Length: 134
Image 1 (cartoon, rainbow, N blue to C red):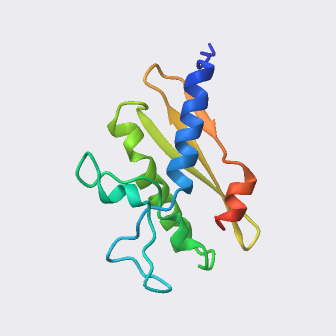
Image 2: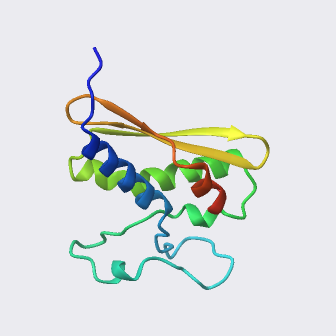
């Protein structure tokens, strides 16, 4: 039996995933950087909840070779960015999907399980992935 997801819920979750993955989260103190810039959204300087941050650190991978280690880091960064969906009860499971496309491209997708059991698969627009070299 197929359960339909309300259009407004689906649109909101798609938007939340894109913002979470493709907004640049500030680099951690332990992250290796190409220069001294840690980037990040200025609003994270004043969180309402301690250590609450928006975005992902996928941007740190933009000049890395596509190795097994890089793919693992991409999955970890995506899971970190989407963890709030679990914490806030919007979903019961987040699965990050990867597909290597050639030597230089990694396609990311996300499969979300909603509280009622429906799943929503999200494959961000190719333009986002090209812009951010993921």
